[in-house]
Length: 313
Image (cartoon, rainbow, N blue to C red; front, side, top):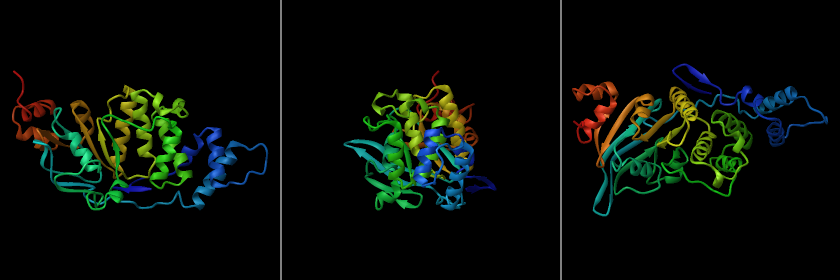
């Protein structure tokens, strides 16, 4: 379980196993080496046998995992591309149990910040820590502790969705039996069951986004997440499910940084906002705090406009 503020959520639940289709139950039983001596096996018996083996292996115990505070810690970050300063002296932190919105117009430096945070590119100066691990000095360990969805999702086109999720689980060291159960949970949540055996190269943008989400959630929470426009491409039901799940993860202790220029998404989801413009932070705080220091603004949209060039007349 992950325990935050007295709330507890089991990592492996019997209900997850009960929802698995028959072929996945049998695959899970083979992975667990559950002995099946009869030709015809009742589903209820198989579920109980699987749960007993999962408990024996310790997968149903409470690991008491807690993130380092802050889980994301960026200080003095600067990045130039030639003469252009993409990010200038940025300080940003995300605490466990918090969703922070990184908002700004196109070209403000949001995606560059996330690409540095996740170790894709190196900054010119500054420091980046993920769950206490230095991304510049120990990038493998830092990357092992963060889940990332890029603005323009790309993936392995010749893998099926099922193969991709199981591959990601191996990369992160998730036991196969745990990965099978967690994959089913999130395949159901994001309604991608009919595409499990489809090649990723044939998926629509929305279904590719769903596939990447299943991949980052196959690990055990609490998470450190960096999500770049995560709602874009999802239909209304998928967007609703994702937002509800992110709130649940926050309440259980995950640290989530969301980059977006869709202000309604940020206002609905985020506890605090970092507003960027031309590579620099121009605002930081809760909506209440931002409204207080930007007199005349009535909502996040007007705060945003006031800080990034003024409210159009």
